[in-house]
Length: 124
Image 1: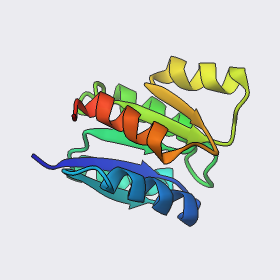
Image 2: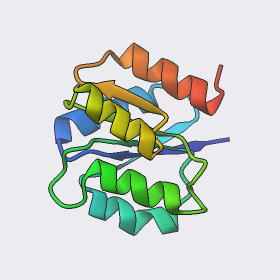
Image 3: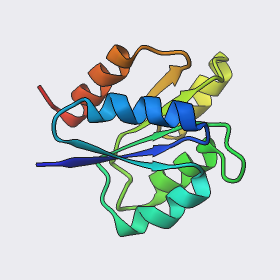
């Protein structure tokens, strides 16, 4: 079975780094968007098993995206990770309170992201 992972990140370098990490795992396909607005447009047309988002983006920020995703019955139970430069405890608490499963602060290791992806998608 092939799993789709949505990556929402305005930084092309970060987006491609995350996508490369995700796609290094057999059976995963990364779908990339550069903004929360683009993510909202493609969410109804696909089925994603995991969503990874940044917080600071130019149109719809990551926290607004999390709020939308967690209110959508099709995505309410889909794990969502935040990867951001915002490392303050209050930012972390807010992201987790909105429904993020994990909150990673940049820079992070690809091994830590891979381990989390494997754990949440129950891949060995």
